Image 1: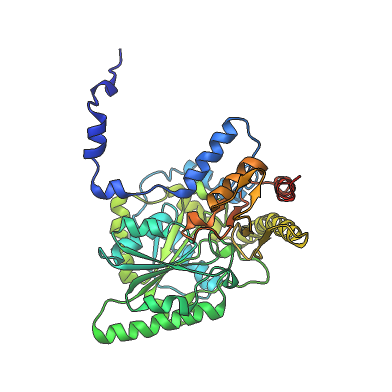
Image 2 (image 1 turned 180 degrees about the horizontal axis):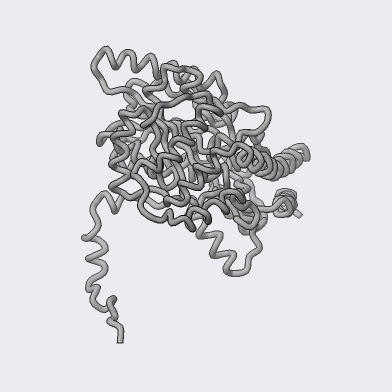
Length: 434
């Protein structure tokens, strides 16, 4: 008979309160996952819901590249199942350097690439080696998860609110008041949650500010200001828009830029956990031991397979073309539908989809009564769309944005085109009072 372990847990109230550290007690879970839990509960009760909340892919709709699937199997069959190097297998690091040279025009030296199990460990490790307790981490909002990383590193997070007219991207004027005190600035393009791309002019001006500040700091013997540039979605930049990098626009940014990247979104491979950071070698040399101590590397077979597929331009180009077109069709359907509602006088609108898998939409319902419910907050708006239209979205408040704006994120990685059409029909019926 098995021992009932829980019978020996004792005073659980005492242990729950006394065992974790104060830091652990203050750690917050993801607001997006809390929303996902609400959706899951309703679906379990039989509700018909179109789920636009998750920044992930339904593999039955968006499978990984066939070449990647076959290559992972081949690598497993070849016995590639032991520990990889903490920095990543050399074949993958070389393939990443070649990708940046050929596609981004950036020729990084050996020793610049740190591979991790997705983008998150390199993000955490970069912050961890850069930030002392109390250091200032500046980040535009809305954004994905940066406030949690500030907390994890005992840093002082400074959110900077952005505006829709700039695609929710910061301007140099927005950041300038914080340049002198910041240790790290975090930028993301194409942007999660907004599906927008930073313009050449905005990025150049920000980079010129950083270079000027670092010239001052070097002369004063102060630690430099670093830009963490999350470009995980750069291969999902849509036609008519251009992905720019800090270093290509302002080469003097090279010593001060950490790139974050992965196959997670560009290959619908979130569960494969292959990500990386590209940075100056002297910084990589400090990041590598931390990733190694965490054991936060991706599997050797997945790394070797990624190296092979990345090195075959035909595989990548063919997949990306079809994949990007399918994502764009869904976003365009949403965009056209919401803008059509706007033209009919309904309180809905959206920005143009520029990249990633997201669309920024706005519902101007605050202070109004819809379907018998008074909308007094963005959470009220979210629940209204979920429970009365069967449409699950994430309000921008979950990404650190101000309350009461009516902005929400639609994510299309787990929906069909028919799902989108059905959701639009239900939203229009709700807003029309039908």
